[in-house]
Length: 190
Image (cartoon, rainbow, N blue to C red; front, side, top):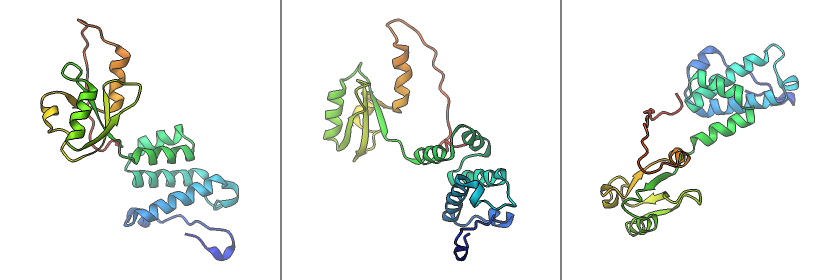
């Protein structure tokens, strides 16, 4: 909240009731921006009756609310990043990652798989020069987990970052590995 008649913006802390009654995330987003601005020039813009830690606590609470993170994780992120970096990280984490697939080179070549999927209405490209098996899917007219190629085992749906451990291990014929898979809930912020 600002009083523009004073030529200087005055931010007022919300009451506990206002914090408990969150009806509009736009208000929370605006309060985040306001607090970040105050913290950027704390000496001049702060309420002299409020400490930096009070602003930081309110900011952490609002960030948890707005981005659906728990308090513990947000506190750790706030220790790691500057405020600008933190906001950039949080916004980047909100962006949906593209679907990526791994070609099963025991059954097909990436080029042949890409051609078959393009003919089915899939818009895709190689992930990059760093992998010879990965494809990124931008859009598809067919469910990627139900194509004849998928059902025949020509590819699997796999995040691009999951390609890296296999590349790092560089497995050789007749080597054995124990792979542990951790199941992660859909809400990746908790």
